[in-house]
Length: 150
Ligand code: RB5
Image 1 (cartoon, rainbow, N blue to C red):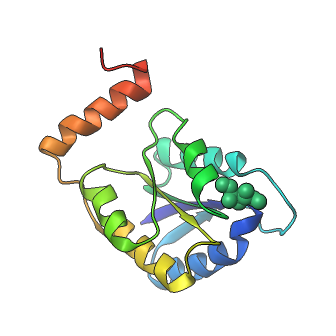
Image 2 (cartoon, helix red, strand yellow):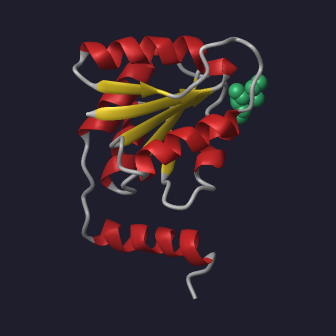
């Protein structure tokens, strides 16, 4: 799978770990994150990853900041993004199965590299269940588009 990955200064080390992990597991990785430890602003990387995913160039996206919170909030402001902040793989599986999430976010200061590998592996493997969940995702997308369900 072709995957976009982005991170701020808080996520450089975990990003590098995951890039190696993804490549070892046969994925193509587009790194649009910072590779420097200098302080930077996470919305920049949320937008870069979202653009790669929404354009269809990459199938899924991965975002990392210190907590994963700022970068996931930023990504979810972009029309078409369904970004799930995950700290364990059960949530990553359900984010795919129930929410059809297209980007996963993680916190480099809150989880370790092995947990991050499990989250990413799950997120890239699981599919969307559709059915009643599709109706709910349609409502999410109406909120995204119109700001109201009315
Ligand atoms: C940067 O210091 C930090 O605020 C950022 O990585 C993230 O945790 C924000 O949500």
